Image 1 (tube, rainbow, N blue to C red):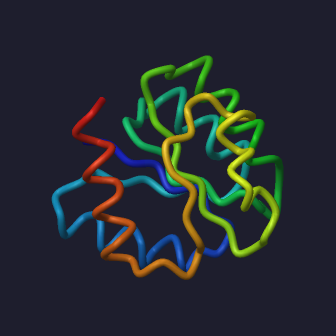
Image 2: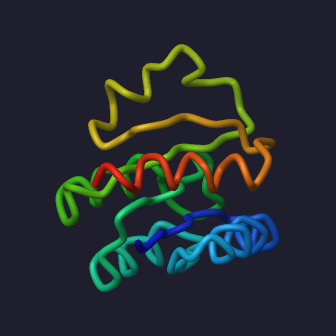
Length: 120
C-alpha cells in the first residue's frame, strides 16, 4: 500500500514515515501543495496523511485534487489547531476518513493508516 505524507515539518514527516515503513508501507513525503499534487499524479497513493496547516499552499486544495485525480484514495487529516474540531472537515472533504491531532503517537497513526488502507 502506498502512503503519501503531506507535512511541512520535515522531522515530523520523517518520524511518521519511519513508523509506516516498519509496517511495510511504501511511503513518500511532500512538504508543500505543489509537491503533494505531483506525488498524487505520479505516485497514486492509497492513503494520504495531510496536515491541515501547510507552510506553502492549501491542504484543502490538496484534498480536492486527490478527490479528482485519485478518488479512491482516503485522506487522514492531522492538525495542531482547534478549527474543524467540530467534524466539519468531513463535509468539506468527501475523501476524509479520519481527523487526528498532530500529537497522536506515530504507532497510532500507523494503525489508523492500516485500518483505512485495508478498505481501499
